[in-house]
Image (cartoon, rainbow, N blue to C red; front, side, top):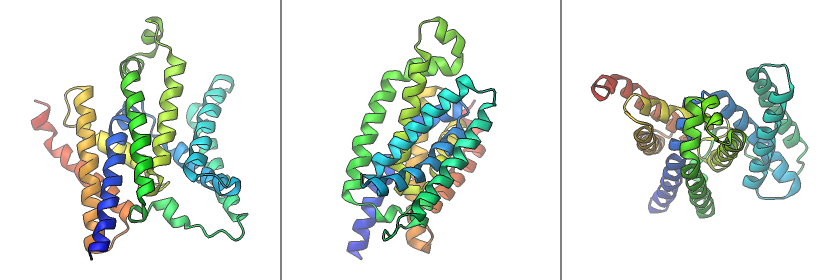
Length: 266
């Protein structure tokens, strides 16, 4: 029992780390209406896993490389294509997911827990995973702090921000790279198919309670931590899958925030 609780504590620490990073970053995903972009990056993560196995490199590095490639491809296609942004995202999203599944089918002799990658297995995180999450997450928060004001100005009015000298393209690229890194770090917690939910639901709930961008980031972290804690408790108590349980807990917190919004928005 103590051995299992050690695993549970390690999983909780890892989940809290992801919630602390995903909260502030997810606020910009909500404000900039980039949920579909998050899904596209998450689907590309499976291709990164396949490439990681094929190239025999660290899987997180493989995911980051693929997500960065998708971000760059999106920016290039948006500049030169006549297609709408959501159409380009749809092409990239489903193509990357399919390429990942096809790539995995060529991995003879390698046993892959596909369900674990798709839906996460937070109880399987190791101490090395936790170190990766906190080092990578710390880097993401430091960079996000530095670009917070220009990114916020772009979110409010991009043309005005550009006229005031904000390097819009560079900030946008950095923001996409941060999302790619967070997706790579979160993959083992809630899985490829559920990563975007952890980036969206806590900030969406925080929006009902916050009165400023900074307070929304703080509320988002708190809701994320509560969702991780509640999801792990439910998984431990009722033997439910951990990743989906965290997302369900986040959904319940979002619904609670809706009922409390009248009191906080006065």
